[in-house]
Amino acid sequence: MDTVLEFIGNISWWMWLLIFLAIVVIRDVFVQKAHTISHNFPIVGHLRYMLESIGPEMRQYFVANNREELPFNRIERGWIYASAKHENNYEGFGTDRDIYAHQHIFVNNAMMPFKVDKNHPNAIDKSFLPCAKVIGAYNKRKKPYRPASVINVSAMSFGSLSAKAVESLNKGVKIAGAYHNTGEGGLSPYHSNGGDVIFHFGTGYFGVRDKDGNFSMEKLVELVNNNPFVRAIEIKLSQGAKPGKGGVLPGKKITQEIANIRHVEVGKDVLSPPNHSAFSNVQEMVDFIENIAQQTGLPVGIKAAIGKLEQWEELAQIMKTTKKGPDFITVDGGEGGTGAAPPSFADHVSLPWVYGFSDLYKLFQKHDLTERIVFIGSGKLGFPAKAAMAFAMGADCINVAREAMMSIGCIQAQICHTNRCPSGVATQNKWLQSGINVPLKSERLAQYFKTFRKEFIEITHAAGYEHPCQFKMSDIDVNVDDHNLSKELDRTYYYNKTIVPFKGMQDLKNCKHLGGKNT
Image 1 (cartoon, one colour):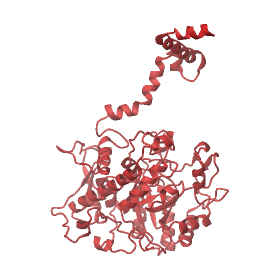
Image 2 (cartoon, one colour; image 1 turned 90 degrees about the horizontal axis):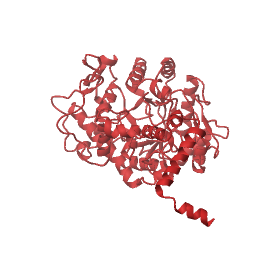
Image 3 (cartoon, one colour; image 1 turned 180 degrees about the horizontal axis):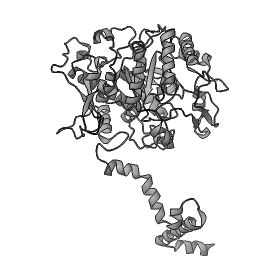
Image 4 (cartoon, one colour; image 1 turned 60 degrees about the vertical axis):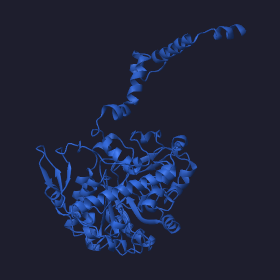
C-alpha cells in the first residue's frame, strides 16, 4: 500500500491531466452513444456544446447591436433598467432606431400641448394615471374596481417565478398603486403583501380545485372572503405563449408549499388540460362567469390569445341579448410570454397583439359592447409609445410580465424553463433566488411603473390630451408596407375606437372605486 501511495504521490500534475483526458477519450469513444460529435472528435467535441450553450449570452453582449435582439433589444432593456433604478433613461444625439422600418410607431403631437394647471392631479403627482373605466360598473357588481394604475403586473404564478420575485412584485405594486395578477398557480403568501390582486385561474383550477381537480366554488368564495385585497377574478381561456395547449407541472418541482397553495399532491405530476371542465361552450362560460360574480361580488373577466372569431361572435351575441358576460377581457399577444412552450406554439399559434386586439375590438364594437367592457392589453406593451398605440386602438389598461421581471433583475437569459435562471427571478433554486433583495427590487418595480406613467402622461399631453383614453386612431401613425409609407391606425386596421367617457383627472381621483378603496 505504501508503494502505491508513493507512486501516486510521484505523479506530476501534467500526468494527472493526461490521465483525465484519456478517461474522457475512452468515455467519448467507447461508452457514450448519444453524441456523434463527441464520439468522432473526443475532447474537442465538448467545446462545441459549451460554445453552443453560451451562444445567446455571447450574441447578446458582443455580437448583436442595440436594436437587433428579440424579444427585447438592448435599448428597451436599458430603458427599463434605468427607469427602475431612477437613473438617466434619456438618449443623446437623436434616435438610432430605423424610423422608416415596418411597424414603427409615430405619435402625432399637437401644436399646443395640454396645459397642466397648478391644482391638477398631475401637478401634484406626475405619475397619477388611473384607468378611465370602472371594472364591473356596467354589470353592477357588488364590488366594482377602478385600477389606480394603467400599467399593472401580468399573470405570472408562484412556481413559474420564485418566492422572492413574487414578493418583490407584490410589494412593488403596493408602492406604485397598481395591481398584481396571480397567474394560474394560486394565491400564495407572496401575493399577500398589501398590493391589489387579480386572482387568475386556468384549466387546472389551482388554489380553487377539489380533490378530483375540478373547480370548487366553495374554495373560491372562501379565498375571496379571506383575502379582501383580491379585487377581481380572471378566467384564463388561453395565453399567448401556448394557446390551446395544456401543461404538466413535474412532480419533482412540487414542494409541500406549492402543493398547499395549488391544492395538489407533493411529488405527483399535475396536468393542466387544454379545456375547462367547468364549462364546455360559450353559453356555459357566461353562466359560469355570472355565478362567480354573484357568489363573490367581484368583477369577473376572461383572458385569451386571439385566433378564430366564431366563438367570440357567439359571446358578443349572448352579451348583447342577455346583458350579461365578462366585465373585462385581457387580450394576450401571440408574441409569447413567460410561459414555457414548444416553438411551434410560441412562434405560430394565435395572432400578435395588434392583429388579435384589432380583430376582437372591431367585433365587439359592431355589437355596441365596447363601452361596457374594460379591455386590457398584454404583449410587449410596457413602453410609453407602444402603450399610446394600444390606448388609441381601444385598450383601457395594460399588463406587463417580462418588463416587470426585468425591472427586478431579469437579464433575458431565456432559460426560464430550465429552473437555472441566473437572476433568481424564474427559478425555485434557493441559492439563485437568495440574491434578490426584496425591499430594493420592490422599489425598482414601483419606480419603473411610476416612470412609465410619467412619460406616458407626457406623451399624452404632447398630443393635446389629458388622459390616454382620449387617444384616437388617427393620433398614431405606423409604417405599414414595403415602401415605408405610414398610415394612421384607423386606415391601417379599418375601424375607429369608441370614445371613452372622461370628465377629467380630478373626477378619476375622486372616484369612490379607485384602487378598490370603497369595497
